[in-house]
Image (cartoon, rainbow, N blue to C red; front, side, top):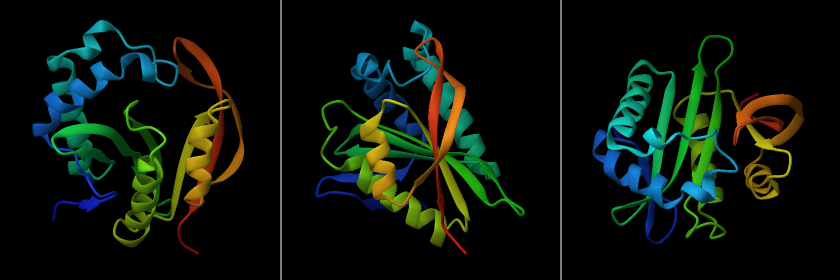
Amino acid sequence: MPYSVSISNDTTLRLLTMHDVAPVLDAYRRNRKHLAPWDPKREDTFFTLEAQTSILGGRLAQLAVGTGYPLVMVKKDTVVGQVTLSGIVRGPFQSASVGYWVDQDHAGQGLATAAMHELVSHSRDDLDLHRLEAGTLLHNARSQAVLRKVGFEPIGVAEKYLKIAGQWQDHLLFQNILSG
């Protein structure tokens, strides 16, 4: 059954589909400068229909085999953000990594918090995950606040954790234990 839930009066959090290629591409193009400080350095080819078709196809392949869970935040027909579980590991670990972003024109409106709240509940109640993890750049106070609001706790700093904006950067790591 497809996952879809309202996270505000006019915004829905739902599973990504291949029909989202053009709306996701539009969102990335609109937010290119906004996301640049928080994302890996993106080549111009990233902002093409071909690249996004390939990327979304990869995310849906991960969904099919249970190693990923890609979601989009949609307001009317416009993608205004994404939330993704990646690296889902079953067995004794039952864990996944979380990543998310919100459109610059919708930042500060509580969408990230609402989406993450729903994702935490869905991960615990429906996906039977035990633990979620997330990392933020050390100076990303807004993202850290979102994580704290939905039950994540800091667990330490990972030095040179990810190559963001062309530089290996330290990250504050968080976790949320969902079950006993």
